[in-house]
Amino acid sequence: MKQNKQIEKGIRELYQEDPIGADKKVFGRTSDPISRRGFLTGLATMSTILGAEIVFGRFMPAGLIPAAFAETTDNFMLPGKDPGLIVLNDRPINAEVPAHLLNDLVTPADKLFIRNNGIPPENVDVDSWTLVIDGESVETSKTYTIKDLKEKFESHTYQLTIECGGNGRAEFNPPAKGNQWTTGAVGSPQWTGVRLRDVLKDCGIKDDAVYIGYHGGDSHLSRNPEKEAISRGVPISKALEDEALIAWAMNGEDIPALNGHPLRLVFGGWPASTSGKWLKGISIRNKVHDGTKMEAPAYRIPCEPVAPGDKVAAEDMCIIEAMPVKSLVTLPQSGIKHKIGEKLAVKGHAWAGDKTVEKMDISIDFGQTWQEVKLAKPANKNAWQRWEGEVNFPKKGYYEVWAKATDSDGISQPMVLPGWNPKGYLNNACHRIAVQIV
Ligand SMILES: Nc1nc2c(c(=O)[nH]1)N[C@H]1C(S)=C(S)[C@@H](COP(=O)(O)O)O[C@H]1N2
Ligand SMILES: [Mo]
Image (tube, rainbow, N blue to C red; front, side, top):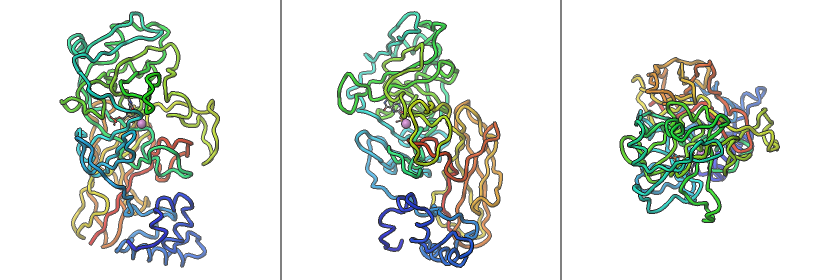
């Protein structure tokens, strides 16, 4: 890429401040329909930087950063994790996974993202680890070892997709504080454990139960033992579903240390913040759980849409429940070069919270036309679904492949950013990759 002061500043930052202005500064492209000449000169500049003609450039929306200019962040090695993971923060540790590393149908351990709010427990002893069930709405409080859980209850294995509520946050404008996740805070491993329902029923659930809240074995960043790093939960209805697990294994092995070993909750399709790691306790509550990060604005969005940048009162923020429909292009890797005349195989996954994905479409002309692709059924509820298709490109040049999933209620992913919210949650805009046909 050309050495240019503006670009050094960070293309995303520049576009966040003023997308139309950034277009002008970086590419000389203007979106003003009257000075169409400027728009076309801009496209020419953009093409020069990309090193290829933008074939469907006339359809390219103004203020759109070409997918080819992916952000670069310093990578460093995390134990047990693929070196390609992008570390966003090291205290607490947070790392996301580039889309092309998520191509496996079932996410391998070394390619599952990490989102830690505190300090993971050290020297975990599996044999002496206990889980306490308590709360206002439990009939009999009980304590289980992992061995008790394995012996007393039936084991179940499900593929469950977990996605951080803040996945996609980096795109919001005005920017939202927090980890600047792009697309990689999602994964869909196979989890083995017991049903949360079976354990809760073994203790007895009182009629007034409305919520469950978890307690983890990690420490608050301040190391103050009185404080919890995070303690969230779900309504009792979600807790009682077949697929709500207390898991000790992932993909048939111990859960990786940074992902919650030796025991964690897994609620597929909901913000992954509900899937408590290093699980030590579950409280059956007679009110909405009031643990750390349950209060506004954490994991909440405005109950009614607001204008970008608006202040929203705590009482007008609602808890995020099921995640919205979304998809990823995991093959090929963004930025590849592909030979003209050969079909390009394109693959990815799609998921839709508690719903299923019914239809998957891709576009190579900035969303002017869409082509439906093959979509597989999920392994079970809350598992992501494989989609795959083939693309023909009409001539040499720069293209973007855009992917759009539609859920069982007919709701599709937006092509532009969905509703702005103060904490930058629930960005399910279409994923796009850059492809150069040579
Ligand atoms: N005990 C505990 N559980 C936790 C967290 C945490 O910091 N501590 N982070 C939550 C958040 S915000 C997310 S997105 C997921 C991340 O799960 P992963 O690190 O296994 O990908 O774990 C959730 N469970
Ligand atoms: Mo999260």
